[in-house]
Image (tube, rainbow, N blue to C red; front, side, top):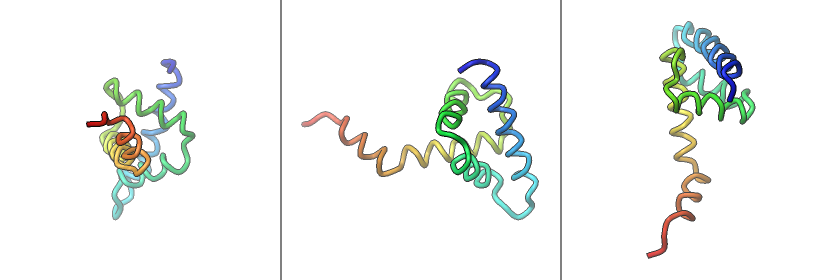
Length: 91
């Protein structure tokens, strides 16, 4: 992913984080995660997750928490568990 596209994703994610972080009675990270899951293209989600895997510099804490939640949800999905099962060696 190019540097400029990473910068754009970081800027967008942080703007979403600012919005949901300002909501007094809500879980900001949950709001960010839900928004990214619902409205970001899969390539955008993959790009920001790759960026986080390389350190995630410049992302606000609420955004990092949201992306960790998305990653955990993805890793614990039935499709992910099925893929792990298929990859497991037969004993």
